Amino acid sequence: MSNQYFENSNLEHEYKEFSFDLRGNSFKFTSDSGVFSRQTVDYGSRVLIDSVDFTEVPDGAILDVGCGYGPIGLALAKDQTKRKVVMSDVNLRAMELAQKNADDNQVNNIEIIESSVYDAITGSYAVVVSNPPIRAGKNIVSEIISGAKDHLLENGHLYIVIQKKQGAPSAKKLMKETYGNVEIVKKDKGYYILRSVR
Image 1 (cartoon, helix red, strand yellow):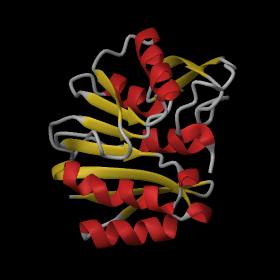
Image 2 (image 1 turned 30 degrees about the vertical axis):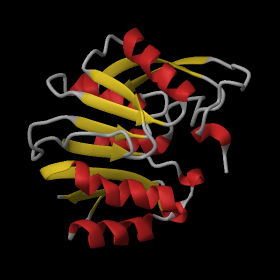
Image 3 (image 1 turned 135 degrees about the vertical axis):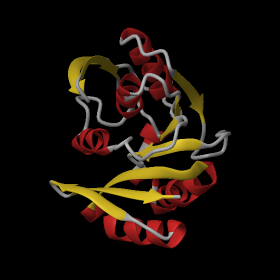
């Protein structure tokens, strides 16, 4: 199992700064050793960010489970300035980077909390998004998918990005079983964007 999903304060720092455009906004990101996709915003996250459709989503907050250094949550927060975005992770280094990236990009409608999946999550959300930590194991991925149901508003949307070779078919099956519906919003270079509505 990768150590990137746990406390990494003992890892030597290797800061990386880069710029990226997401949902029509320019961002400057700082990443570091011990966090997922430190060189650039990974392709799956990019496809997920572009695929979230707010036209039929109820009013309410957004939850980014496993936010890493923040690209998904911050992109959606800057796009949806009237919605609060809660960003959670277990990796304290990633959380510190997410806060720095929020500050550096003047994104104020966010809250970053330490939570293992939904352990510290309260309230209900209009949208739950996740690029789940595949290396943390299938049980964690399944918990992110099924556990979102207890944190979604009526007609709230769950969006998951997962590669076909890393379990998209089984994730799709679990979402259908849990929510009674699932849609493949997009397929792109082996990445599936899956959506279920509560």
